[in-house]
Image (cartoon, rainbow, N blue to C red):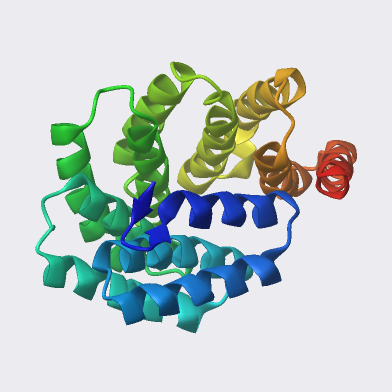
Amino acid sequence: MANGCISTERILNKLDEYLNKNDYDSALKHLLYWLSEAQLSGLGNIELLVRNELMGLYRKLGKEQEALQCVTAALEKTEEMQIQKQVGAATTFLNCATVYKAFNMPQKALPLFEKAKEIYESELEPFDSRLGGLYNNMALALVDLERYKEASELYDKAVSVMSSIEYGMLEVAITYLNMASAKEAEIGLLDAEETISRYLKKAEQILENFDKRDGYYAFVCEKCASVFGYYGYFNYEKQLIERAKRIYEGA
């Protein structure tokens, strides 16, 4: 589907192709090219789409300055386009908040999460995957702010939403690992040991039983591997890293 002379489908499909190969350099060049084209064409919605994708990529690459610049530009664009009550703006608020959280600014992230939550819960169906992602990421910020009860409630909501969605179980695995980390932060590693073990086992079962082993599965394996390693599951950490590598090499 095209918008003006720029096809959003073309942009996103090519981006997925690069990400499935773990080719972040090409993905970045691709997005920066289309950002420039959108700005030259005066297509604000395309620019916002690309900036949302750039925020996620900069976050993965650990490029804090670039990610924060993208946050500022994206928030300004939502004001310029007067779409601040729409679902598209909520997605931008969520992505901006996730950048703030990733770079240790949970106090800046939380108001944006709250704005996204208000719109999503008003406009989306109860089991929309976007709600699951919001709950999971917002809970991470709440843990950083030591608001553990609120975080636990959102993690439970995330599991409920994503368990009801086809292919959503990978997100459930991530949520279980987040819940393990949250419990450690709340009561300490020793007291949380039994709970942590239970959550890790649930996540492992999901990863082992999940059938669609594509680029996103590989990304999740990489993301989960370090958590298993942190808790002493070194062999499983190694398995996940090697599994992800094989998937990327075969893409």
